[in-house]
Every structure is written in C-alpha cells, then in structure tokens.
Amino acid sequence: MALHPDAQRVEAARYALLRRLALAMRHHMVVHLQPMGMITELLERRLKAAEPDLAQVQEAMSKIHELSRAAVDSCLDVVTWLAPPAEVRVPLDDAVAECVVLLRSNFSFRGFPLAHQPGGATVEVSRAAVRHVLPAVLLALTDRAPAPAEVTVATTADGVVTVQVQPKAGDPGFPANHPYRLLDWQEVQTLAAADGVAVSRDASTARIRF
Image: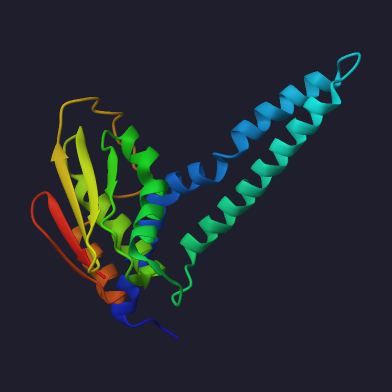
C-alpha cells in the first residue's frame, strides 16, 4: 500500500535526520568500548606476571563488567533513537539533556560547542518528539552558520525550548564532513508537524513548543 505524500515527506525527513545523526550514534555506542580494551590489555599483562596480583585482576574484571553493562545500555538506547516508542513521555529537561549528550562531541568538533541551560521544566513530553525535532533544529541552524559559535539550548518551565547560535571567538573546529546532505527548515517543520510540535525561527534563534 502506497504512503500518502505527506507521510512520505515525514518518512524522508526522518531518514535524512537519522543519516545525519549516524556519526554521533556510532560514537555514543563505542565510547565505553575504548576503555574496556585498555583495561583488557592491562589485565593481560598482569596475568602474564610470575605471580599475578589477584586483587588487581579482580578489580580489572569488575571494571570490565561495569563497562560492558554500560556499553549494552548505550547500544539499546541507540536502538530507541532509530525507532522510539511514541507513547514514552519524560520530563522535558531530561529529554533535552539526552539530545545534548548525544550531539555534544560532534558539534564541538565542528566548532559549535553545545550548552544546555535547564529551566526546571518538569512538564512531561513525548521523548520521540524531542528526539525528532530538537536535533533537526540544531542541525538546520548550524549547517549554514559560520564557526566558531556557541549553541545554547534553554528550556522554560512551561515547555518551550529556545535554541540560539551566537558567534564567538575561539577554535573554528574541523571542516564539516557531513555523511549526508544538509537539512533544510522545511524538513524541520515537517518533522515538527508530524509530532504536534510548534517551531519558529529567525536568523540565529529557534523556538520549539512541545
């Protein structure tokens, strides 16, 4: 059965967003694996000693266990980014923090350090809506902005998120090597409308009402 043209546009916009988030997701998944490899190498050297210190071996094994659990949790979380349950609702500040954590390293490399200013927003919102709309807004605003610039994501208690891109002196970061095409504002509006979210913008600021 063919999709309605409006549904096709939503699906295309979500696919484009996921392609743009792919590098950040990959980093999110492997960040726990790197220290695990280092501890494993250290453990291997200790086991080759004539008289291994069993207390140190046990401590290393405990750290590997903790990191492996964190890696599993991280991978499961990335899966929910790919197919977020629409019914899950979380406090707005928590949902915004998740997006900032996912994107912070990627944006910093591009010369756009992310700053989160929680405003005590305990109102519960759709996690899927935040994960669709907020990253799209962040990408659309910075894709065509000169670096370096600080990106501030602020919330208010009544459920409004303001995203502001402010030029600043500093490291311009590395030239952007986008794994996919740039997002345009029309796609942001398509994603927002599909989740019942209101968005507006001017040259350097966007407002999102969940």
